Image 1: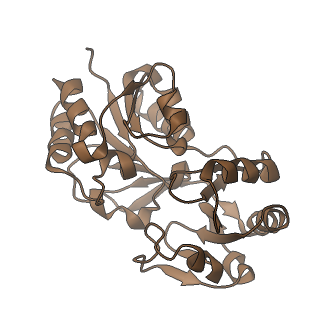
Image 2: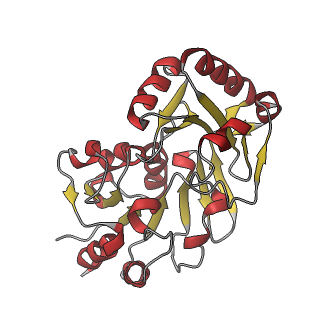
Image 3: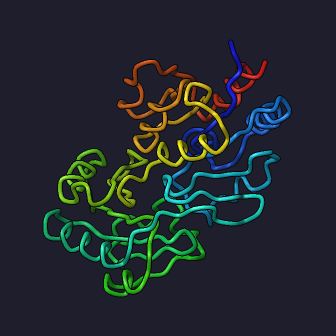
Length: 272
């Protein structure tokens, strides 16, 4: 098997273990790839303030595609390389349209550095991933949340329901004004970015800078926010417990789970 020139991996549900840590096998696999001259890049829905689990990894290309592609971030230098933000006016209009069209939703905003939530957002799901322990969280009414800011992500949480159905509803309301996706099936939460923003779009920009073609990239993912990225690369790898849309992706190889360090195992094969 010809070695890839770049390896890209999602974090939660993919590279990170179920407890959010980096396993010894995955850690060693990244080091092996780097030693073989193959950079490893992470592409995640996480904002830059929540990249703690991978900050200590030794990498020659310490770039992270964060917030589903809205930010390109240099982890080593702690600097933002590019950002695609949603202006406050656009956010306010989107929220108003969604509130009028979709029942029982609460909203949040994320700048990458801070995140704000309506009170109902927390009451709908007080243990939502990363909210409870996020030191940069604040709570306010919708007017306060959108006032004078620019956001890498808008969050739409429904009191109950299905993430796929909510994503479809949000896309119907927003049309091509903004891009909607989701990264979890255990709660009806939709993540909204600026129009045209995705992990795939930002990865394409990065690959052009690095002189790497799509068919020279191996990528790993598990959720709909990874689908465009896996469709774009030459070697897509899908986790065994991935969303059905990814499991159905033509040409993708299904590997094990994050509990089994399946990404690390496959990287070992790729660099052997």
